[in-house]
Length: 495
Image (cartoon, rainbow, N blue to C red; front, side, top):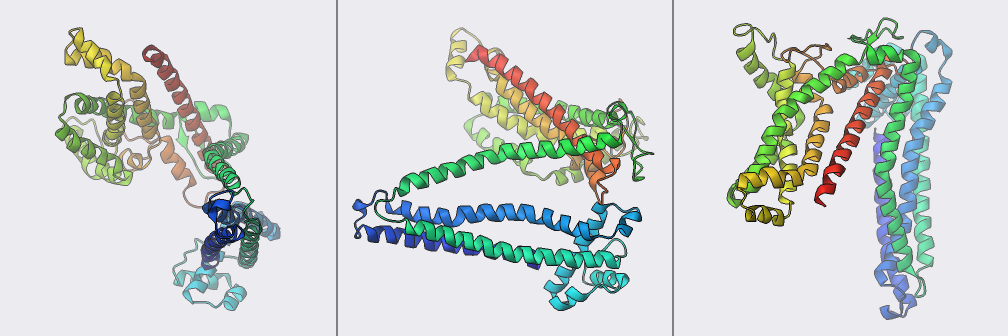
């Protein structure tokens, strides 16, 4: 930890210092070449300093980012090649072995940082697998099982590669930063078109920033796609999409596992449906009141109070569902009254709390959309003799419908992707049931459970998380396409 984080922070700090010095000296050199008269410069003095600063920061930062991405992949590959075949013959996957290697390496780094070991002692430790486990446990680094000498040797190699890579990274990145600043500094003279260069550079940075979202989406899609393909090589697609039983066995090869997605889909949509039944009417009615009926004083108080709900962490909502809403529903519908509800964790519990959480999403967005409807539409309706309620129902809401649909779909997407409220409020049972007082679970909750702990990514029980994620991605994409169709259809009538 000490060897990985601090050098990066120091490298970034040095690059920043080089850029500041480059800005000052580049600006001063340009003014000096013009005899101190800024009017003789092609561009303003600030552009000459900015050009040097950009050359000091951008190439070095790009190299640093690429290095930080490539180095872990390279180190993992090199260390994995040195692992003896006897470890794999024992039934462990390469992923689990490398996880142990990384934990031991990080534990040794922690020991060095805390002063429990010197660097030389950390480099020579590993003669006894039990001793190193007990030693790391004594300084607060827990290992799940005994560590073999081969894993300790691989961890030492891992630490060595990382140390060498970090040192090379620091030297190369700082050299690029200094070289870029020196190159731009030499070009700082009165005839240099610094403004054009800086503006093109800033335009390139803006394009790069705009491209990050697109590239991130593509990266997420491919990460899901490749692992989903690997899952369907090990588990039949028909059983996944049409199976009605979810019972992973974690046997290692999926032979005894039932991984049908239908119970999870049903729980996801059932809980989201109840949440939307709560959030849409309350949110939409509150938006209509705030935008059309409330006085400015009431609106200035009520709107921020409603929006506070959006800032509450979802874990707090989950605790509210577990400790308050669940017991309340049991007292109303439990075995002492109607005998409909057996426990506090149920679809109704999670749905009600999730609906409360979604109220500000519907209310605030719908309120802004309703306020954006032109006043001329209201005046025309009143001029024809319509009442305020008739104007709202027949003019304002139809005009604002595309935006309201967008707000509802945003809330629906938020509901489908929620995890903590489901885990604490709905339970973990995967079942097909129409009873809203039964415990159920969702796709997102099972994605978390399948990847919790040391997952063997060569087994269907771990890879199924990516298939679940891809299924949810496709469903959400279809929902957004449908929403876009509705928005365009109704927008044409009011443009």
